[in-house]
Amino acid sequence: MHNGKKLWSIFGPLIVACLLVVLLFSLPISKKHSAAIEHKAAVSLSPVVFKNQSIKQQALSDKHTHYVPFFGSSELRRMDRFHPSVMAARYHNYTPFLFGSRGTQSLPQFFNINSMETQMRNNKAVYIISPQWFTKQGVQPPAFKYYNGELANLNWLQHANPKSPYDRYIATRLIAMLGKDGTVSSYAKKIAEGKALSSFDMGIIRFRLNMLVHEDAIFSGFQLNNNYGKHILPNVKKLPPRYNYNELYDDAMNEAARDTNNNRFGIKNSFYTQRVKKNLAKTKGSQRNFNYTKSPEYGDLEVVLNQFKNTNSNVLFIIPPVNSKWEKYTGMDMNMYYQSVEKIKFQLRQQGFNHILDLSHDGDKPGFMEDTIHIGWAGWVKVDKATNSFISNKQPQPHYQINSKFLSPEWTNLTPTPDNLQKFQEKLH
Image 1 (spheres, one colour):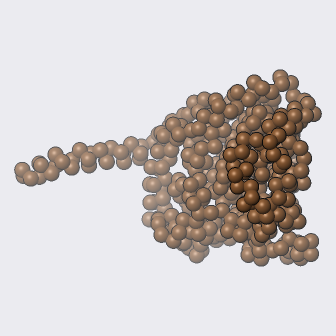
Image 2 (cartoon, one colour; image 1 turned 120 degrees about the vertical axis):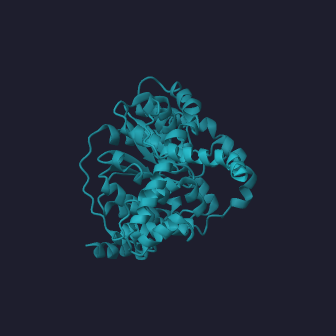
Image 3 (cartoon, one colour; image 1 turned 180 degrees about the vertical axis):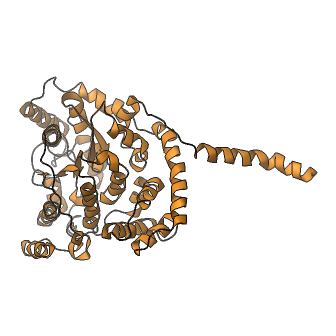
């Protein structure tokens, strides 16, 4: 008895604490984030916001604001005064909610979008597709793991349909990203093999999801970057009070000319000095063998398109350019680049996604690119004009014709010549 009391005195408090934690994360909880947290999260570009759900679901459901999801990658971090979030704060009646950083390609974006299914239904969105995503390997597992968490994975698994070619594809890609070991991969393996999850599996998923949702609601608001205070508000004050596209475009080109006067590539001075200059000799001809025409990224894009179809989302797709002076120096085959753009547009248009802003030929325009691959200054002004027109004006109801042949290796490995695209089109009908 004495030994029992002694053991309880040692381990009892720990056991009670664990039980209390389990109880806390099992009870119903309703935590509303403040409007200030929503504003901060919308431009924080935090992986916590990306991989979880409470803040973004609340913001996109908020009837007092008009948040519009902007999906992309690292270009969204280029927050000069012409950035879409700054321009919208100054001139427009909506607020971009940004989802994008380096590595947030189509597969992590799918899980992100899937976690906002209710909020996306019958609403508009902007999706920036960078041809540079479409490498031989596609999204890298470390990047996927960084931006995609267990909450998003289990949320998808809870509703995954083993009869759907899209869900079987996603399950296969999920295993490729996470490895074959682990609970999520074991569930994904069943879906990939066309098997339904058992009642026991679903019970474990629901229990774990409940814990993760509680954790997200309690802690996510404390892990946000303050881009709103550091970049958005200060830059809003630098814009003229009234919107005039031509004046803003000229102003952007003038600012770009001042900010790119220490190099011949039209790259922002600070970026050139800190990131390019010291490696300039090594990078000459370094992109000669790049190829964006064959990639698993085309299949990953397809599951995003299918998700947009499922939620009847009306989407503007933006294809950004690359810095033409830099690509000439590094030896990129621009014919290959334009072929990849045509392949992306073919995949979109064949399935009814007709709102496309193709900027791929604008990479030689003054003040359009901030660095080697990212839009800035005048480029953002042009993007803002298109996004504002799309968001602020009523758009025709989309009519999507999704085709799972775009998941096939035949498509992902297709060289997009006109003849090949014509032959593939014939197989779609």
